[in-house]
Length: 178
Image (tube, rainbow, N blue to C red):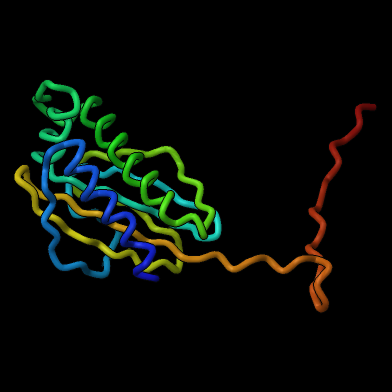
């Protein structure tokens, strides 16, 4: 995966945490993801499609997620609940949206965020992607940004020399009433 595609997500996460939450993220060493479990207990997940397809995950420790929600809502949740889920979904959406603007050449569409809460949850990345995890420390705990996507190869037009047309779908008519 091209590092130029990861940097907009990292820059966006650092900016959003700094400007919206007043929380500085300190970057640690990135690594290639092994397995499908995100680093922390709550994950905001967004799918990307266009000239590239993939997934971006904003994963936060319980304490970081609750503290971020407190800043956004002005009230500290006692546990990981729907308010925390909504807040992390919104942060994920903002981070992905900001990064998308810096990746115009890929004509990306961004899905609505999905938020998963719980230890040992799984987030699958598209086949043939090699997700990269970039962990961060902050005053509230741990945050990581996981990015895995791949450029799409353009489809061969049917009129291209040597192209074979796609097979027509098989249709079985329904029986006619007697």
